[in-house]
Image (tube, rainbow, N blue to C red):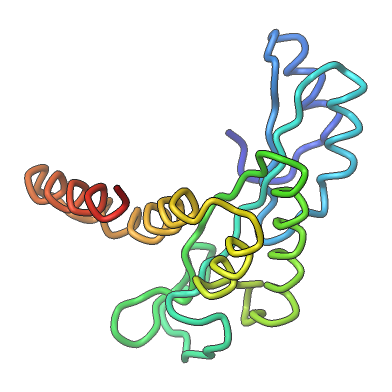
Length: 171
């Protein structure tokens, strides 16, 4: 809903006043606000949904392609028309999922930092092998990675064909 700085207590109070049973947080590339957010939600009786908006590297978190074009939060352009990174929203469903998000966020800073803390498929698959559902995670990876491509396609028929092929691949 919001993409920017917000006061956690104000957001939680607004959710309570609006009768919302849950509220989520997805900090960009990190999980700095999670502890305060969780405590405020629990104190107010609102179910906290914990997540992060990861920056997904086009190929590998270890690559360092030359960046060109505009420098903003869209990922910029690199050679070949790809982006330096793509946005990928990840939500924790369980305590184990929360721990995996912490590991993912830490690894993005320690191993994949290049303008932004980036993750890649290898890192996501590694965490999936440690108790996560691979099919569900592949669905998230593919949808996040190709969302930008699908948004740029003008023909509804072509878009439907690509989405159908993606769904068949994930089934």
